[in-house]
Image 1: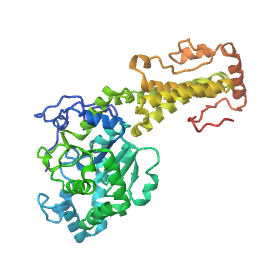
Image 2: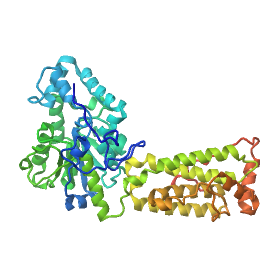
Image 3: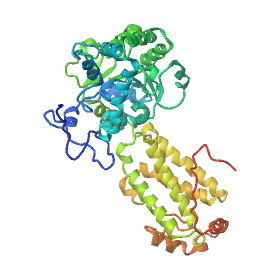
Length: 479
């Protein structure tokens, strides 16, 4: 029976240091090589090389990821797919290569059985949230580093797609999407979402390397790696696949190959085999966390991940207030509820979208998010000139949702949860206070009240809840 791994008690499960998931506190202990906690042992301190920081900020950093950052990490399960396969065909994992073991298994059991074994492992990991968090910790940490838009991996899993919002480039036909905006992941050995693309056996590997040497995919990869700074993560010195890919790239590019960074926990990693490379011995997720810290020291455009932590709680509170308000205050009796409902819709839409888009890094770019707030202000002013008051209320809510992501905790306390034209400076901390404000009706804002009354009177039923559809910049109508 495998020896159980240990994590710090207050964390409950393995996760990155900057992450808080579903009420689990983020891991914040200092590095301790003697710790029984598997996270503390792996978070080895290191100096972030200035060249790496500069490459990241200039968007010249390419992440080249191996299985050690994903499902095959020892922090996920104490045995790997390779060990499973090798032992099932009575081969010694210590003396057998990955493709040789896969070939032997396929010869004995067939290709479908081999792929099913891999799928079963991935499904098992994904079925346990704790295991999935451990397997995708690196991906989630990388997701908010918006400077990195190009990823290369030999992994079959889909975490770069699901956790980093990356578009997969698996086959030559996929290259039609390479020039489109957004993050891409180039999957050298295929994907579980494209079973026919999987590279596993010795024959698969030969075909793959021939394609990399001669084909269009290899040419594109070589160009990418020749013009960017590479950070190899999740490989060990004994990883035959890594050594062969690196050797192939060296042979093809020669002196044009930029000096890479190799992030590994393998204490036996022989740097002399990779001349010019900088070896960083630490955990892959911790490496990205420290890189983000160093980037923020140079540029103030990268939002700290912790800023996302309170979006969920605020979203739940707004939902509760929205439901309470619409249940208690009928639209025909209180027409101004129309605007508060639209405001809350905007606030909720902004929070939900920021959470949904977190993995892409879009909202981690503070400059872009601030510019988006300004553009929505132009939209608000345009709606106000047209007396589209329900659009004005919605946009104000949406702006406040984006601002909530950017501002500090003290300023967050001032984000209003209700809205009424003509009552900008009046406190409305709860439903009773809001009700007292809108009971003044037409006196607050004559024109806005008349518009709201007209909408309320257009409904036959008094049991109506209005909803403002999402109003995304670039998609709204000018009509």
